[in-house]
Image 1 (tube, rainbow, N blue to C red):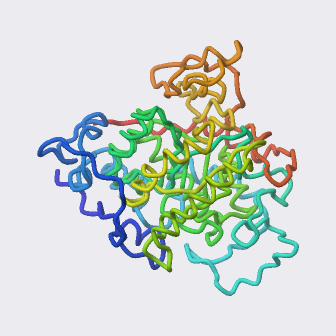
Image 2 (image 1 turned 120 degrees about the horizontal axis):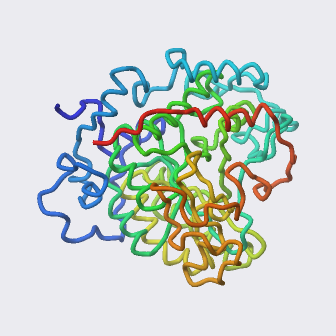
Length: 447
């Protein structure tokens, strides 16, 4: 079967889809040089597994279109919706629609702040009272609606950077993932469902390498612009393609552009998500656009680095928004990694810094808690109650991994996540997602 014609591999095309008015990068060189000696004459069309895809190096080779029958079948049957289009409905998915109807009955009565992926530029929102905890307008992290947990804006572990990247999987990411492996560094990756459908072998590498993976929607729309059913669908179908391709059901979510209010929070938390925001923003995705230059991006990183060195992280840690979007964003991350290592005592996945040892619904995947992670990298030995964890922090796909006992917080424990106060409340409505996701049985098919 020929490679699917819908697969768009150019970074410019992906960027244009993700960000309205964006243009291709390409205008600013970066210092980091491409790895020498890529696999000779191999390209993505020759890959037959995650491991073989991981051995292919160079954007031109990695970003060649290839066929992946489970995705072809899911698209043809309607099991997943068309890629790079805002989800319109879940009515064709019996399980999803039943769950949506159940959750929708208790959803906050908050109107969409736009239409079908476009925010209303003339929205007259009351920022003084901020009734919806609308992050886009006020950077609110503590919900106003009852029963919702705060978003995560910082990590509680001092002198620690919660390290993560939005918008993957980028087709040409192997050099970057090799770099992380060489440095024994794990990260959190916020994957877009449509990118997973486009780059399934690349998506599998994050799990194989032991990184933490979170949901970043199906098509990357501003979530508050959508109807309730669209909000649910953007999350639901991302979970489905993650299960289909990667065998996981994540319990963390980051909204595109940070666009979040209590209506979107409700559906996200009902699906068992911890919501991960940020405190610092590199604006690396915007380099070459809207007056953002390479120097702007480096200055944004430098602000985080200087604050850490000045002691601003002595009582808590930080999260910075960066991207796995193209060669520029990942090259910048590699260039500045030594400076981040110098500024912070520890760089960990966000979930590790939150002591989330169960990142997925599936019980056969675990990750180290913070004490285990740093002990494996030269830090103080983990206490006896935690020392049974896997030293590498790598997820196990073959059974309960070492350290899968109760050390560290559970996947939906957010007691350390509040950055601007905490309601301390939970809701039986919000918790319904945990039980129902246990029934989420999409076949995990691999070539």
